[in-house]
Length: 193
Image 1 (tube, one colour):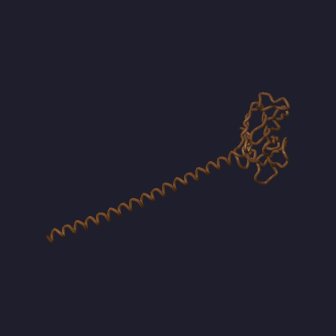
Image 2 (cartoon, rainbow, N blue to C red):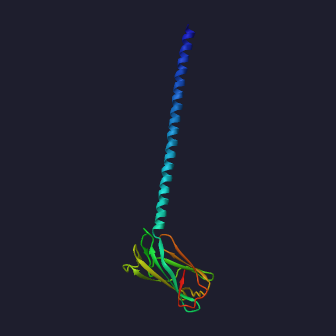
Image 3 (tube, one colour):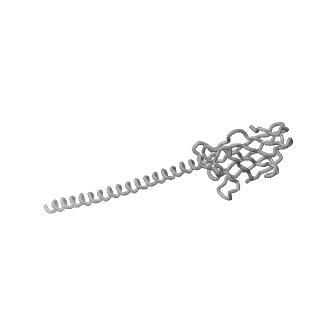
């Protein structure tokens, strides 16, 4: 009988230890699952925040965009183009753009590229056709930009030549104008469509 009682006591002790071990394993699973869920949520929140930053950066890049208004008009001396001018306005919802070429910082840069010349920063003059005269291109304003080609880069653009003018505001997207001169530039005023 004593053996029977001892075997029953041992069986109960083993069940208690087994229950305790099971509880420890179960708690370990819950803790690991909680840590894993925290890591997944933290990664998701971090990714969402980075995505939001990317969207805001994209909006900032596009908000300063300018648009070409009208044609690109060139002046010719009969053999080569001497001046190029074009009108600029802000794109819808765009931020103001500094078109004052005499400013030393935070100003728009204009570059010129053709088959023989690459000028990174050309001087230009701006005339506000519609605006408040502060040198900033703001919503509802129109600015006429003129570039003296011969003084700036010594360019001698003759007939059937392709060139590119890049207008680069301090923030926002570039405006790229690529034009080809007509077969005859004998006229004084040439519309470069």
